[in-house]
Every structure is written in structure tokens, then in C-alpha cells.
Image (cartoon, rainbow, N blue to C red; front, side):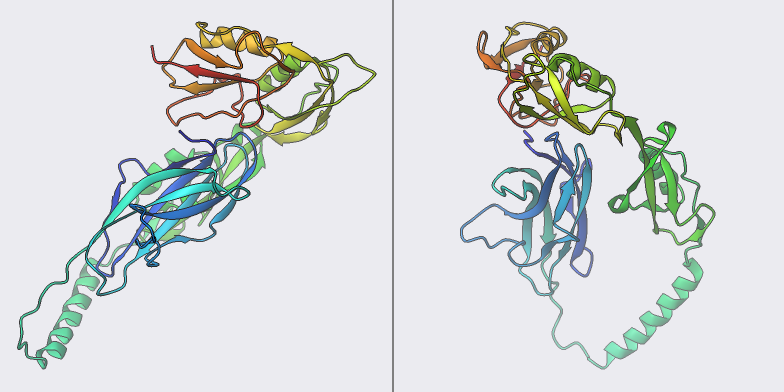
Length: 374
């Protein structure tokens, strides 16, 4: 169950076949699911884990291509390319590793990715007494044959399609159809119009350019900007509803006394109202202290529980399977008293979800809701 990051391999990938040079590549996709900006690090682990470590990672055969430390905004995905390079005459056998994503500030906290296996084959035994003088003759023949085959079967150039306005899956399909690939490790973002959100706005090389089969195309995707609404002088539950209605989330909540407003009222926010931010951004709130009672939500439907928890001025976080409907346990239990705006340290497995109008959080101590399958 992912605490900070979802670390995924492409569907169906559990092994890599090395080429004749003992090389291979696999990509992991790492997504921040902690609902806050966080610095992450890709860490390779040899399997099985033994002491002292002596697997393919320690041998230097498996390495992350590029930076291992990345900054993850909320819900941001990063692609980590892992390259395998086994030296000649290495011990044959099956080797396994995985990529973990850990929090840079606290490296003991993180999540594991799926295991990937590769096989180092046994060297073929050549017969004794082979006439060495034949080697240059054979090489000359092979070079001649290779040149002839290349001239006959030389790959023809292909035309780069127009990807503007397409989604990433649509662009991938369009490129695959002409034997090109999408450079998933270099997908940039551009602030644009609402209609450009999640759609490609530019590409390199440009549409119509000639390219060789197998070449990659890098793209930039539009992201929608929204205006931050004014939530000051609203109660915390009202502020939460207003922000989620604008596809924004509650960020850090600071309880602070203010003699000008009653308890449980938002009196300051950051960013200020009217500021343009990306969809999904978090808004920090300053709230006057107030103690509220945790409602009883056991045996309620998820939607009904959400209304009760938000109505009490708390943030609801789900933990469980997305097919579940009824709440079976909660922590703190009714009728505990907690601070308004409290949040909870939550674990959400990859098969789970957060209710669309609630924002998954990772911090604090409010209401933990666990959901069973029905």
C-alpha cells in the first residue's frame, strides 16, 4: 500500500531480455500520492536482500539513467529509466532487482516498485583447434553480406505525425502506427487555455519532419490555470467545499488566535484570492482555534460519511478498496474531540481511490476511514 509514491512498471513487464552485449532497459513510473509537494529519490535494490548485499546493483550492473533525486509536485509523475549493462564473462544465472521511491528528507520512508528479472546466459563452448586464419576471412564475408543486406533492407524514413491537440495515449498510438516512439521521460508542461489541459500543445520534431523508424518525439502538454477563490471569513468546512469545487485542495492548516473572528473561521489564505494556480494546487489556510467532535460514520455509505466529516470541519481520508461502499471502522472514534481542520496520516493502496470531491492528504491527525469490499 503506497504511502508516498506509486511505483509502477509498464503493464505485463516483469523481466528484461538482454541483448547480445548484455544490455537492457526498463522504465518505472513514480507518482506522488502524498498530496503535498515532496522531494523523492529512486533507489535500486538487489533481490533477494542479503547481508552483505551482493546482487546486480552492488556489482554496478544496474543503474538509474539520469537524476535519482526529483522534485514531485502534487500528483506529479516522473519516469525513471533503469539501464542494465552486464560485463562480458560475468557469472551466468538469473538476477532480480526493483526500484524503490523514498522521501529524500527521511530515506527510511518510501514505497517499493515491482521486481524485474534478467538472465545472464551461459557462454557457448567453442570446439578446440579452430583454424585462426579463417577468422579474418569470415569477417570479410560477413561484412560484405551485412552491407548488402543493409542496402536492400535499409529502413525508409517516416513522416512525423501532427500530435497537437492529442492526449498522451492518443499520441502514443499515432506514433506507434508509423514506427516512432513518444519520449515519456521528457514530457513538459505549458500553462495554457482550459481547452488545452491534458492535451499536447507543441512537439519536437515538428509535424511533417522526416525521421528514422524508432526515433522518439518529445512533447509538451497544456495545464489549466484556475483563479484561487476567496475563502477568508468562511468556516473551515465552507472553505473546504469552495476549494474542492474549484478543483483545488486544502494545504497546510495553521491554528492561530484572532480576536476579530470567532473560532473555526478562516482569516488568512495563501495564495491570495485571484491568484492563478495550476489545477489541483493546495491553498494554505489560517484558522482560529476550535475543538469539534468527530462524528459517527461507521456503517455509513462513503458519500454520507463525507458529508458528516466535512460538515464537522474535518478532512476525510479513505483507506481501502474502490469497490467498497460501507465504512467499517474509523479513527479517532466518536465522540473524540479534535481541532477543526485536522488531517490524518493515510495509506491508500493503488487499487483504492479518494472520493472525487475530497482531497487525499498525508499528514496530521483527523479522521481515518477504512473501507471493506461489498
